[in-house]
Length: 58
Image (tube, rainbow, N blue to C red; front, side, top):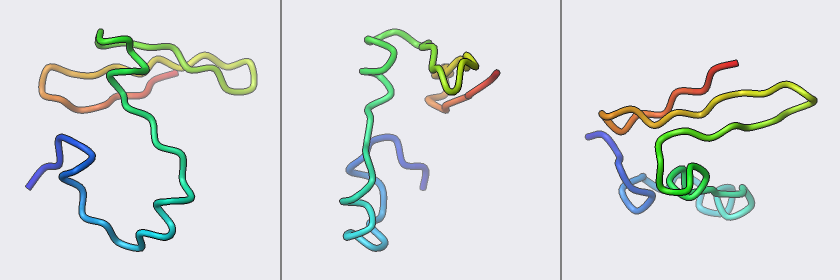
């Protein structure tokens, strides 16, 4: 089964997941399908495909 929503993910180690930041990809893209992410002055593109997959490219 492919998880499409956070609620669909299995919860291995709930304590570990509770400590990790979570970000909704549709919020990052403001409802679109692309967003730019900057890390150490490098710009990456996050894209949501029509199939609902995430692609991160430099």
